[in-house]
Length: 255
Image 1: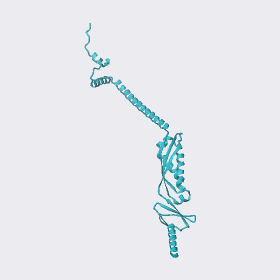
Image 2 (image 1 turned 135 degrees about the vertical axis):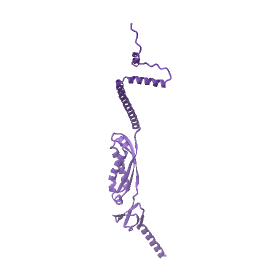
Image 3 (image 1 turned 90 degrees about the horizontal axis):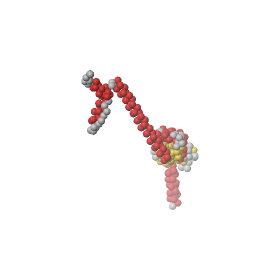
Image 4 (image 1 turned 45 degrees about the vertical axis):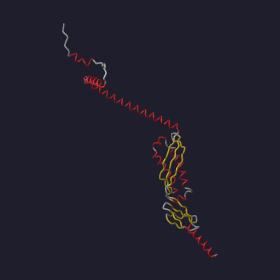
């Protein structure tokens, strides 16, 4: 009976030692192994063999991690208060550095992104923040990537997701846009009047060289009015128009 119990205990110990000595890692996982406290190597994927009690393993996920940066109160360079939030994508490219050089790489990357978001957006004016989003996103990515590179972290993408302005600022921007549209409309109207005046000057110069053109234009206007209106119209006739006919009339008898 004692032999059976002893054999069962030995088998149990062997199972425990075997389970602690053999690890299976997925394709996206790496094992950073420490032997007696010293860094040995990063192994995986597949089967990884460890020496029980001597080796210790830290499992690292190499997949892309999505990090949500909550809303931050910022002040733009032109002293406009705004609330912004962003989303960041990163992954571990060096499992050894992610374990050895930083205590918690995910938390460290999160805090770095949060502070960088506030400092970078505070260097831009509100118009740049609204119209040049792609350039600002690229700048954020480069700065955060440089800061997290010693930790074995690669920043793949940073996107400023939303920019929330105070209601007073929204109303002011709406008034500004309305005034700008009115200004453009007045400029276009003035340009049209200027071009029309130029054409009238050219027409006047042409009529001055050929006076009969004025009479033809007058008759054309009469024809257009007669076609469009069905009522009687009293239209003044200039003397210059009938002067040629008066000159051709019969001469009065001489006394």
